[in-house]
Amino acid sequence: MNPFPMNEKVLDKFGPYTLITGILLILLGTAGIFLPGVMSLGTAIFVAWLLIVGGILWAIHTYKYSPKNVMDWLKPTLLLITGGLMLFSPVSGVAAVGLMLAIYLLLDAFGSFALAQSIHPARGWGWMVFNGVTSILLAMLFLIGWPVTSLWLVGLYVGISLLFDGWALVVIGLSLRKITSS
Image 1: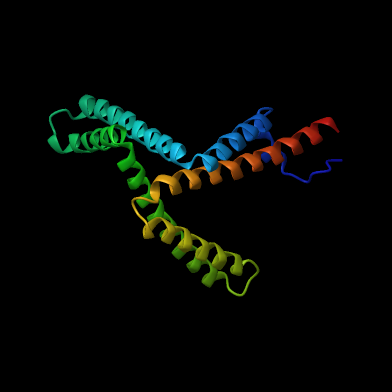
Image 2: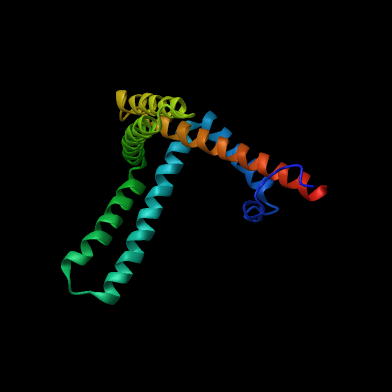
């Protein structure tokens, strides 16, 4: 008898390295919380490289399938320029990432309020309102001191997210160990 009533299909998606991955994410998240500036710069540099690689891949695609159409070169050019600017000026990149996070959080808040209204008075609607209010407060934190606060808020936000992801994987990994040992 399984002491943890989990869906077997879901359990199959987690492997033996779930616990190790969780511990590494906890360490990385904790480092990001204590060194948010470093985490912010690392995040901006990572995003910059993603944009550059995406621009290169898109340019290869454009070269193979429509090399003479100037408009088709616009997207890879913008990706390469944006990634290059973020790579060579990561502090400005952090400010851009901070602004994108603020916009995301505002959209998340409005989505949470809409969902809460649509499910009211069912259970959980209050938690959706709480999520919306929390998202608005976080967005305001980003926007009030933008761009200066982005240097530490982006890293702190990413660090906290990694920390919670890590703890979730540790709990899942420990549950898997208990299931496989019994």
